[in-house]
Amino acid sequence: MRVLGIETSCDETGVAIVDAEAGLLAHRLYSQVDLHALYGGVVPELASRDHIRRILPLLREVLDAAGMRGPELSAVAYTAGPGLLGALLTGASVARALAYGWGVPAIAVHHLEGHLLAPLLDDARLSFPFLVLLVSGGHTQLILARGLGDYELLGESIDDAAGEAFDKTAKLLDLGYPGGPALSRLAESGEAGRLRLPRPMLDRPGLDMSFSGLKTAVLTAVQKGGHPPATIARAFEEAVTDTLVEKTRRALEASRAPALVVAGGVAANRRLRAALEVMAAAQAVPVFFPRPAFCTDNGAMIALAGLRRLQAGGADTGLAIRARARWP
Ligand code: KG4
Ligand code: ZN
Image (cartoon, rainbow, N blue to C red; front, top):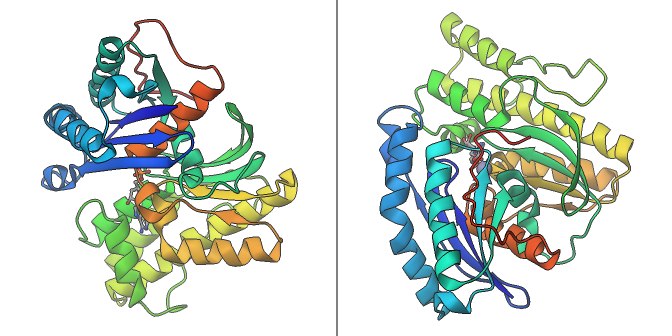
């Protein structure tokens, strides 16, 4: 079984092929970052148009790299949501058309299922059940994954996602867009413990989180002056890390999950990875991260999720093009 995966939910065009035995055969990614950087954020209509320009050349490259022709594939998986509707429709239409032309099923994949299965691309030791800390630009959630498609939401951010907080804080510090990686680089040279920002909702029980207040605290610190940007970046990263680590620790304790998966764009953050590793080691729970390139959006995780769905008998034989901007 070999599945082609197509990801176009936001500003990254990802295409990949995963084989049931050999694993990842080929993957290509085109990031629209430079296009949207001019506007300080993703412009949905420009995103859709750029996906249209990139997707077929990427597909050709992936097929060549895997030494395959389309009809040899078992199915075509695509991100059906959540995400930007126009962007999703681009990938969904191409995927559905290819599947129709090749006479194979199409598989509508939930973007977050792609993220949470991503560690399996590199590490076959991971198996259900496990706890997931999913930290991306759009979501911050603690999920108990009992099996494929059997997910329980244990807690989430009640306002901004962690990645969104990184991006907004980076904007306040004039670090450009998307600011997460830039802010994290700046934080490296910031002095630890110099400035303390609030850890929202840590004093409250439960597994929900909040990050919008942190952004306001950063704004206040910037306006007050007296702290170099690196110190503020460091304080911000420490506050986010402490909050995520403590909530994840509580979720591990409450769920007794035997393993932890950390996925989504913010899982690429070094400080967060290190702190979660220390915490999980203290709980004697193994922690699985995707490789950094598969933390952020990519086609490989969608191909893998599609393969798992296909193996579980979840392929769609109808001709519907599925795209949902919101999908709980
Ligand atoms: O998963 P992703 O690619 O897209 C969504 O599905 O949202 O996540 C993108 C988010 C952005 O907010 C970006 O700033 C953040 O992940 N991010 C990081 C790092 N790399 C990406 N945040 C902190 N540190 C990083 N190294
Ligand atoms: Zn994502």
